[in-house]
Length: 554
Image 1 (cartoon, helix red, strand yellow):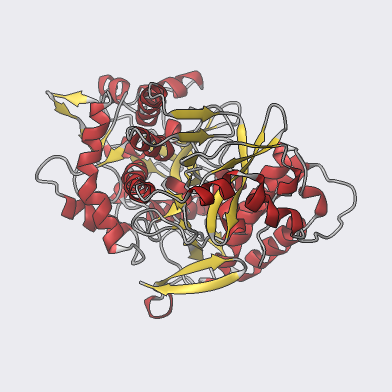
Image 2 (cartoon, rainbow, N blue to C red; image 1 turned 180 degrees about the horizontal axis):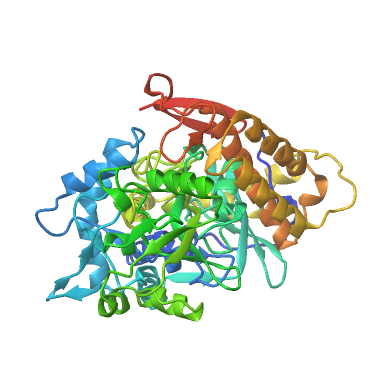
């Protein structure tokens, strides 16, 4: 099957010179990989992002980053907690790599100047849902992601071998004979379509939250990396498992603000509208149960009381501690006329994290030679059916490090000059794309209002493929997505929202497909028509590739 593209590559206005490695995304996963590669004096790196360099999911991560750095905690305990949270679908070796390597990653962050919070002369640690010990490091109280992003950006900019391309929307990965050849890019400011050749492409584009009505993700999280990888022929795994964060606050201007799980880790309670702690007796860890358990209970309570919220109660925690530990949360609530020490805070679940994505091996490699992925866009096997809180930032670091080692090893085997010229020139990159026939889309008449279609997609996915699912609603969602994804006016356009919408539809179609196939309830995938976990038939991964379905037993 020939590769499909958002824009026909034959429309290219310029082909640039060959680059050793291209990274798509500027969060913790992308930047940490770029830094490691650039520290090797022989490698030049280009980093592309469709927004500003700091606009990433990393920036908004409040809670922290997990690592077993202090006894009696151990990597074995961190491993066990991750496996338990993953509901039988974690890859044990992938989890072992993460938990064993985590302390070293913390040391590396400290070396580049990351200021983790200190208490009594030691790094301060907190506990979150599903963790057996306090092992979550934080910075700036509840501004961990911001601190990490600032330090990584500052350090990477100081390195001469990394070139940054903000406001550049990567449309697709070019593949020739199942090997990466480069990327097709639109300069958002000029609308020029250009090709940047490379045989090593790292996709670190973050999440997919914008396909839902409520999400903690930034506006750029439209699933671009997963969609372009799928069009190129990459395998997508575990994409039906989408984690919703239990406690998100809606501000006066209807924006969403995440209330970190770390607040419950420091003792905050969840209460129903009647004032009762509803998690007590539902799970041994009460408010610190794994996120999928807490979300299901919140949804049950909201349904019982006919509300769209439950209460988060931190009134029993000393005010002085709240101000030091959670300054951003205190400040945001104050802007909205609330006092964390005095008031019960209305919260509800919102889409937060995609557990699956581009299927990779233990070195971050996809099934296309030279294509890698790390961070939220990747399915490394670490998270299984439900992510353990604060493992995400660490996963980006660990598997970025694995990718660095693999690329370094392969670049050491110098590519034949003829091959580089073939990739770099207009020859073999465009040879296929100029002669291929773009898949004929059905005519849908006059282009529709894309903003309205995006709103309709969000509502459809929230109601029919959100926290709770069933065959009927998934079928309705599938019909909506399938109709629009084939409309001709969505392709070969330079309108950014339209191009993002195609990626959103592509990711939505994959979620719906996998969710329809998995006839059980496990972790973050809940089927009302199949309410039980079914280890006999479904202790396996669903892998989607070029309209084909594969299954991989655990």
